[in-house]
Image (tube, rainbow, N blue to C red; front, side):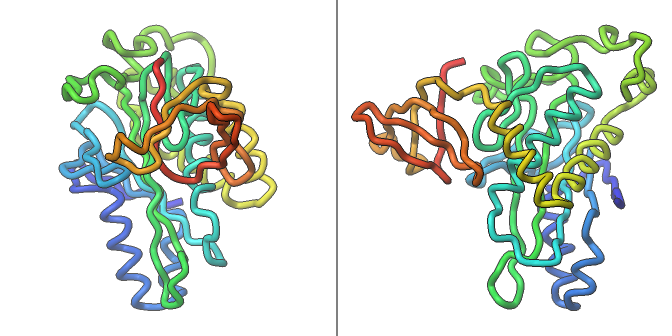
Length: 274
């Protein structure tokens, strides 16, 4: 794994896609050479989330990074990348902070009822029109920040502040967690490396991906809950209520509508009162 660190960048995903595009023009070998490269930044000036939304990425508040994944064959099920990344994040937050992280389908990680992480996987198309590589972007809020009004109600940080899981001092015990060795310094890049390594390990083997999908389903905090589904983003008239039944092996959300019919959702957006 190779980590490239920027103090400030427009977007780690944008940089990763630029690298993939440049390498792709040179051939398959150059593209493969980027596999397991991680682009990390302390701040993003144009961070983005799903549906081209801005992703709040202030300096010194979190870590924002993109893991480049270039498999030996084309990527047929990109949703599995997002699910695998969410599991990797949850594992690392447990290791570093003892945090009981949960997942909100499809790409958000929550701790103590607040969103602390967003994930955005974007594909690179090869000459045959198939996805031959992916940029898996992850942003984690570690330290408290003045969140914009539109996200302040649901966003939180791992350490410090009212919308946080705990304080740095609460993790200074005699255990061997990584943050205990780094509590006097900055743990952001350590966390980026740890999450990325866990993600690459999951993606290295089909059986590990399947196990991660089981873990992804088990970590979901919306199973059994009533949600609002927005199949057409931005069109409130398309919204409907449903009960979450579970998550299948393709990371699709299984829901039951009020009329008793069932659906498997692979796209769209959901909301839930937490």
